Structures are given as C-alpha cells and as structure tokens.
Amino acid sequence: MLRLVGSHYHFRRVVPALLRDIVGKRELWFSLRTADRLEAKARASYLYGQTSILFRKAPDMTPDEVAQLLNEQAEAYELILKSERKGHELERAEILLQRVQDHSESLDQFNKLKTATQELMDLMEKINFQSSIKDRVNQERINDLKETINTLAQNRLSSPMAGVQDERAEPAPKPIRKAKLPISVVMAKHLDGKKVSPHTIQNAKKSMALFVSCFGDMDVRDINGNVVGDFRDALLSLPAVHGKGRKGLSIQEEIDRVLSEELDTLSPKTVKNHFSKISPAWADLVRREIVPRNPWQGWDFDTTQKVIRRAWTDNELLTLMNSSWNRNAISKYTYQAIVMMALYTGMRLGEIANVRNEDITEINGIPCFLIREHPETGWKPKTSAGVRTVPIHPKLMTFGIMNFIKKQEKYLFSELRGSDTRSRGQTFANEFSKHKTAIGLPLAVTFHGFRHTVSTKLRNVKADIREIWIDALLGHEASHKSMGTLNYTSGIDIENLHSVVECLKYENNMEMTK
Image 1 (cartoon, helix red, strand yellow):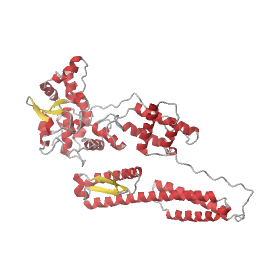
Image 2 (image 1 turned 135 degrees about the vertical axis):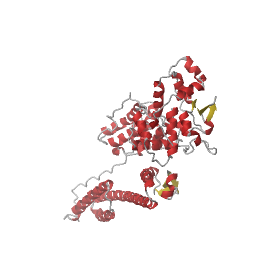
Image 3 (image 1 turned 120 degrees about the vertical axis):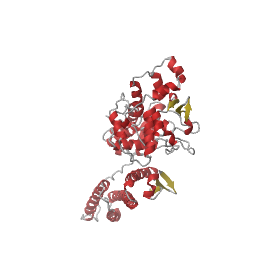
Image 4 (image 1 turned 60 degrees about the vertical axis):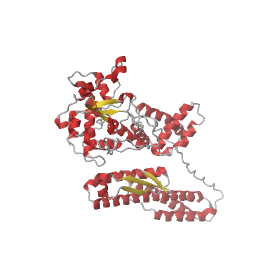
C-alpha cells in the first residue's frame, strides 16, 4: 500500500479485476507528499477508506460517474493537505507570538516587537481554513493568538512611557516553552535506574513499542482516556501469536490475520499486563503534575472470559443461503463452493483455501481431500491432529466441486491469492465478514462457526458414530485421552470416516445452488 518513490511516499491500491473496466484503471496512485513514514501511514489510511467507498459504489455507477467520484475524492484529499499545511503555518505563528512575548518588556527590542507583530498579523491573513471540526479548532487558536497580539501591541504602543524604560520595574519572567514529552522518552526515564529485573524492563519496552506502532510516539500530555481505550480495543483484536513468526506486518494487517486465518486473539489478561507495564510511568507524571490523571487505570478486564465461537442456527443459515452475494473481490461461484465445503467437511478456512489439486485423490474408491503440510510454501495445518483425510460429501460432488480443478493451476480455488504477508484466505474472510454484516447477521456468527455447526450436527445424529471418528474428521485432538485413542487414531478406516460425512444433512432451502 505504501511505496517510497524518490524521497516521498505514495499510496498504491490495486483495483479489483471486476471493476477495472468501470474505473478505467488497474491501479490507483496518490502522492502522499511526505517523507515521514508515520505521517504517510495516516494519509494512506484516509485514502484506503475513500477507495473502499469507490469500490463499493462502482458496480452501480457509469464510468463517467466513477470518474466524477474520483475527482471529488482527490479534491477532498487536497483540502486535507491544505489544512495540514495551514496547521504548520499556525505552529509558525505560535512561535512568532512567543517572540512577541519574549521581547515585549525590553525597550531596546521594541523594534523587534513591531516587526514580529506585523509578520504574525500578515501570517494570520494568509491562514484561511475550511469548516471542518479540526479547522474550527485551529480557527479558535488563531483568534486567541490575534487577541494576545492586539493586547500586547496596544499595551506597548499606547503607553505614555513607551519611549522610557522603567528601571525600577523588574522585567517579567519569560514564559517557559514546554518541551515535547514523547512516550518513549518518558518510559525510558521511568525505567532508568529501577530496581527491577531486566525481563521486567524488556516487557515494559515491548508494551510501549506496541503503543507506538498503533499511534506513533505521542506526547504523553495528549494521551487521554479515549486514546488508551482505542489502544485497548486494538490489543484485544490482535492475534495471540502477534510478534511470533511473521515480521513487518502493520497492526491493521495483524488484525486482518485474525479474520483470514481464524486465529485466537490476545486474552484480556495479556492486555491487562500491557497496561500494567505502562501505568507506573503515568503515576510519576501525575505526581509531577505534568498530567492531571492516569488514563491507564480503572479499566475492566474479564480475565476469565474466553471467545466463544458458536454454531450457526437454522434461521441464520437460511438467511445466508437466501442472501445475494454482492462482493466484488470474490466471485459468487467461489463463495458458494467455499461455504459448501465448510458445511460438508467442517474444514477451517485456511485448510479450504490451501487445498491443492494434488490433495484430491481416491482412497478405496472414495474421493477425498488430503489435509497435509506444504513443504514448498511452509503452510501446514493448525495442529498435528489437523493432518488428516476428509472424504468428499456426495452433495459437494453434485454441486460440482471438481469443476474447480484446472490443470494450469496449483490450488483448487485458484481465484484466491496469497503472499508472504497475506494468507490465501484473507481476502475471502474480509469479504465474507462484510457480507454477513450487510445481511444483518450478528457479530457472534463467524465463518469458523461452520466447524461448530458440523460438530454439533454429527454429535446429535441418531447413528452409531464414534466420538473418535468425529474428532478424526474435524482434526481435533481425541476427546478421550486413553492410550488407545492417542496411539491408534491413524488406523481409522476411510469407510468409517465416509459414513460420518454422509450423516451431514441440511434442509434443501439451506444449501447453495449454482
């Protein structure tokens, strides 16, 4: 998304294949006009949101309407950059005001006062903000500056003693300009010399680095309860394996991994620990009256609560099956096939997305999916129990799952694409999540819930199905930890697994049709 071209960053986003004829472009590029990576990320986030709106509206628009919307978004982006430039000018104005205040009591610096005042007034005339909330706040700052300037100038210029220095009067002390207090500096100073273990210091630095990766190296005086609350929400959305394995992913990309790879998230206990590492530094700041309160205290963390992924109800499945798929990044046929595979195999999304053509075979005349490690890419099932054989349900054969096999392609679902930093199922996960939200399904219902649906149905059928067969089909560790189940699960006949699969039945109006 971010590209460094020359000395400045640029925003790049690929246009979905289905929209390229409408948009008239394969890619969208915007210059971010900055060499600062953090500032570039902030501007890129805005552009990502705007282009997402474009992609969502484009299917219902003509090419001319798309071009007009693009122009409007570009103009809005220019206004934001203009507002930021005006904000920089405002900072210059505040520095000039400091010069006015510094010299206002010194007779021999009186000419400098007049020069600085005029320069500042000229600068005020140049600043012309729009009507956004941010600009209204800046306008209030300008008004305060003008009022201070006028008061200072009037007092000095109208005073009858303007040309005479009152030697008896003590010069007013110069106001002390507040230095910036980045959180990294505050944390380093707090930890310096503390009688704690190196391990504790290292963990505190990790917690601080997590905050910086989310919000940048903010001044501690700007970190309030709202910022800390946003940080809490971000941590609770991160994968439990964050920081282990993949490197170089942004916080947003890590959060997206949770959706695409069905990962567990950080526990409330872990998030609470991060807060407890940062909070003591704020206690020092409160004592020194640098900040009024400690925003890291008073948060509730239910350390006993775990994420519960429940099965789909019949009504929710009916809603899904009767809905119209309007997402652009994934075709309707691929969407239907992936949902069907989840309902009739209980496979995880990551497993479905990584089925290769060579992973489809016949065993004793029964067509099967082989869920196994891919040495060439490093992908492997979530657990050792996930390495298994899954017989293909007759409903999948009727649906036409074999039609997805293409000789020139490696994977069964060749439409899905992955990279070093993006799993093959991530795009589908994002699109599926948006779809179910759009049709009114609750947040508690997820794609992973199909596994729970399959598990629940199999354990409720009135047939002679052994618990160990269900666990083997779903790739679960054996429910009963006897030596027999731990040592001999690999000997389960494919015919027994096939009989388990065939017990999966849904109402006719709860099935995908081509």
